Length: 384
Image (tube, rainbow, N blue to C red):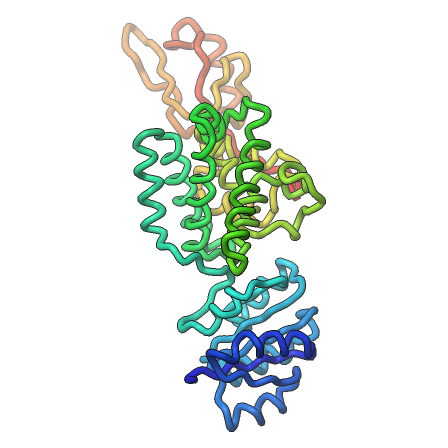
C-alpha cells in the first residue's frame, strides 16, 4: 500500500463505510475534525489524500483553512450534504479543497479520489472528449444542425469559463452525451429541437423519456456508475424557477450547476440559430423572468464582449429619434451626385432627423427602413 487516506469526520458511520471500501487498496487513517489530532496522526503517517466529511461547511471552514496551510500540496476532498453556490465559490477561490462532492456519492467516485493528479469540482468522465467529439462531428456530416449545436455551445463553454467556475472538459463530455441522446429521437424531432423551433409540443417530453431510459439502463448495468452526468442531462431543460422537465420540485441552486449552464447556452444557441444577433439574443434572454441562474447569464453576457451590448434594428424615417446611432451610411443626392450625409456610428440629432424628413425625396432609399444600432438594456434582476 503506497497511499495513506485520511478521513476527517465526526460521523462514525461515514468513517466505517470509507474504511471498509478503501482499506483493501490503501491505508486508511481516521481522525476527528480536530487539527491537533490530525497533526499528531500525520507526524507518523503522512497523508496522500485527505477527505473532510461534514454536513455544514461553516462548521469546518476554519479547519479547512488550517489544513490547506499545513497540507497544501496534498489532495484535499470535501464531502458535504449541501453547499450553496456562493460558498462553493468561496472554497474554490481560497483553494480550500481540490474536489467537492455533494452527498450522496457513489463508491466509484470515492475510489477515484485515490488516483493521482489534482481533482476538479466535477467528476471526470472516463472517455476522451476527442473521441465523443469526433462521433458528434461524424454524425453532424449527416445532420448539420447537430454539429452546429455542439460546435457553438462548446465555443461558448470556452468563452464563459473565466467568468464562472466550470470544468470545461467535463462540460464538453456531458454535452456530447446529451446531444447523442437527442440523436436517438426521430430526424424530424432532432431538427425541431436543435434549430430552436420546438414546434413539437411533446419533443421535450419524449427527450425526457429517452434520458430516463438511458439512466435506468446505465445504473442497472453498472450500479457503481457515477450518476452526476445522468442527473445533469435530466435537468438540462429545467428553468431556474423549477418549470420544465422533469416535473418535480427541484429548482434554483438545487439544480445541478452544469444543467443551469447548459440551459443558458442552449437557449442562446437556439436564438442565434433562428437568426438573432448576439445582442438581440442577450436582450431576449434577459427578459425571460425566472428562467436562468443570474450569475451564469451574466457570465454569458460578459463572455460575448461588445457584440452583447447592442443589436441592429430597422426604423422607418418617421420613427427616427434623437440619440439613435446609425448602423449604415446614409447618402443624399446633390446635382446628380451621391454625397455622404450621415455616416455609420454617428449619433442622430434633431437637426439630422429634420433634414431627413424635409428632403426625403432626395435621399436614396429613404422610403426604406434605416438600420439603427440600439444599446441592449438588461432588465434588473428580471431573470434572478
